[in-house]
Length: 254
Image 1 (cartoon, rainbow, N blue to C red):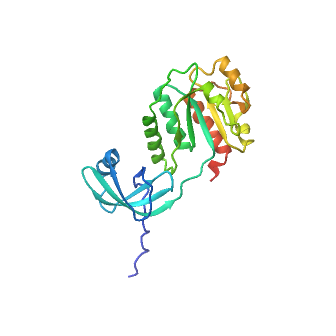
Image 2: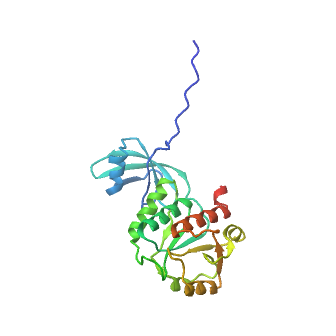
Image 3: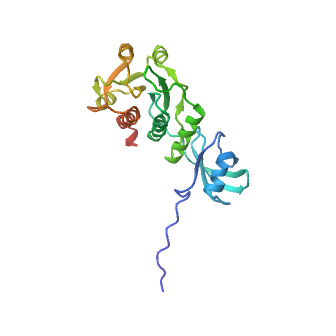
């Protein structure tokens, strides 16, 4: 009796394979010891076993397939098998977001990582309700978001800077779009008409005050944009405008 068609070979590595960013440069054949919270995640949460696949990214060379060699109480040892892809290319785009309350700014960080932002520059303005940011915690949020959405590049994040200092040290080769609640060119056509390095400045919960708005508008590279007819929360404005930029820059057409 003729046998039926052979079953399809399962994809390898499986889509469910854990993904981690590591600080070590990866190369074929290398042995990598995963320790601390990442080891706990692999061994206790994902319950990996010998020969299971784990995908590692080093934020330099790309993503790599590794296999579990051994698991212990304090470490999981992996062997690098082969590179799966090079580090991704993203538009030269910086999100300059005013600091918000912690849960709201956490959301900005998470979604900026998911959307493909290259750099994040937190900004302190007159109406900010926060003036400090735990950079280690912020990086952890970015890493977790990047791992979950299969990014191979981590967004850079800088220490918070006051608005005047940001503007006084501005790179004259980089356009500065800022969301002005008093109006400006619609965001989509403004972004589409620009082809070089750019940044987007988003204000805090209460928006920019009049003095700040005047200083921003007087900056040579400043370009006021509108995000539509409704008043948006700071986190919503950051996420929506970043999504518009990525589409206009062609990132969503890849």
